[in-house]
Image 1: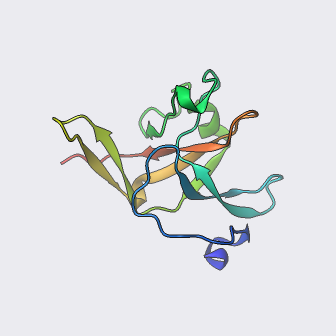
Image 2: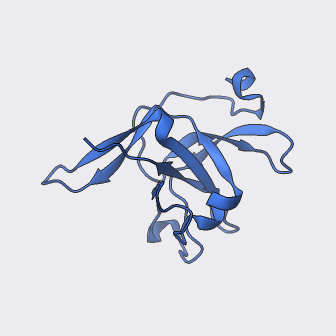
Length: 133
């Protein structure tokens, strides 16, 4: 993987994940500080917008491809700080009875935006184009 993405930094132990919930760590490829090399880091899924004071106040795990450039929670990171999310796909979850359900986004439909915070961990959001049946 390090050769494929030309990574300068890779965490020592990477384990496959088959289901990830918001705030859990996910493998993300992005430019290292300074922008000269790429690195892989485990980052929490779901950035915290500037107006959120604590990770307990809420994360924004998903952005819609159609509106990501204009939504305040994602617009800044969408313009300036993109990343590659190493995943096979994602779901856009929605309530549907007692159990809920979701529309699957294939791996070709996912991208990410890094959202750095000075007082909280860096997070990322998934930008997805949902294919509805």
